[in-house]
Length: 408
Image (cartoon, rainbow, N blue to C red; front, side, top):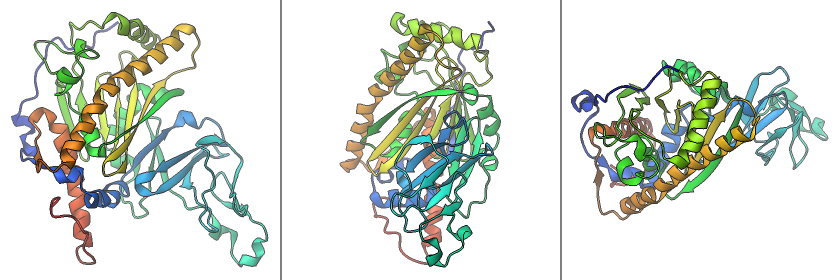
């Protein structure tokens, strides 16, 4: 086995990331409902959003339904008879009724429960009772399509009819990295979902900095820290507007605790057997704007999507990706334990994230502060802020946006 662990730690210098700014960040952007409403259109309506994985749609007729609460939308993604993917609004073109409430399944057609207007897997209108009375052409009653594309096995949609970038253009050089991730070859996945009383940005910030590891995760992740790097800071940061990356530092002297090691070392052996242990993206953390990040750790390949629910509430979807079914008790145990371990780590974060949200909502402070090793948080805020300000400029000549003075 080839070693991929760096022998020493070379910190990212403060000067190298100073170009992103050092000013305090307005706290109101994490709590103000008017700012949240601007993000709805400026950020989510105009971005490619990761919404699923191709392993969920193996055969023609397979479908998944994804509700994007931030955009008040419900999206159907189907595998068509030709093997291609289709995405469309889960909305009957007769009177707007949602076609299905099933989260996933297999169908040949979708029929509206209200008046039985029926559509095929491509979203084309097929039939409706007494349809001739409407005086409409069938082709004008097709479901409303949504742009859909795939990279690295991940399914993305874009709900902006005026979009100017393809998915490949949106991802830029990160597309190649996504294709090299272990998750790109996944055939099955595991998932858990959590809800948290915190803004989507403060939740995201927690999972893109290591400054908190020594305080919050000494039990679960203490083995990743070492005297030469006591906070477990990354060895490299990358900025691919609007996206971010970092290279995870691995402690060369770290020893996984015995209980965790039971599954960790089994997972390592499976990764070696599957030929993905020495993947070039082994230590990669890729954060795609606005709300998705994925790790390339082959023993624990997972993604995390953080969906806004309200100004002070978010929903996280964490998925782990595997190759092949559970072909032995050992593999089954390993996958279940790794998932439970990941859930335990994230459980340690939730209370402190919610405490941060409550503190900001109190109005006690007007700004928050990022140090240079929290630079991904600053870059993320800058990207959101730039898009909100650009959107406000668009609206300036037509109507006021109602943004509170606190957020200005």
